[in-house]
Image (cartoon, rainbow, N blue to C red; front, side, top):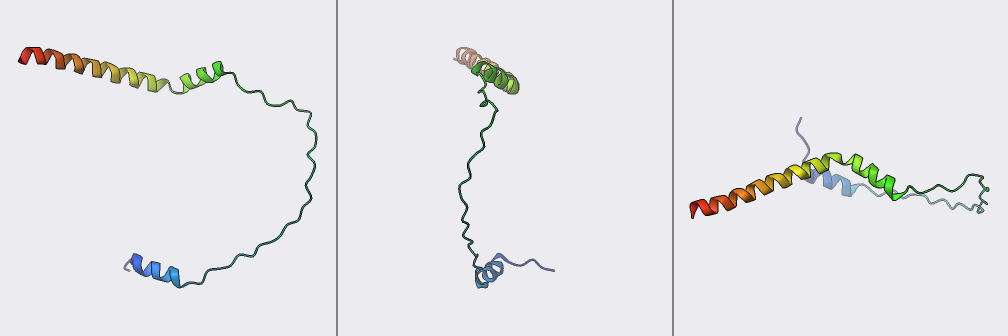
Length: 86
């Protein structure tokens, strides 16, 4: 069975009548919040966050080091070739 073309699909979509959504009005009184005995959450210190990020993205540093070493070797190679072929 052949696949319907996009044009025929689009034509069928525009012919259907849009459905109207019923809107319910909800009247609620604002509820008072119960007092909690829990202390507010304590934010993590920046030292632990930095250590967590360093541990999480350890592979990035190794890839970055490898890229820098490769770039340095190619740069030195270009300089050597410049003087050698000159």
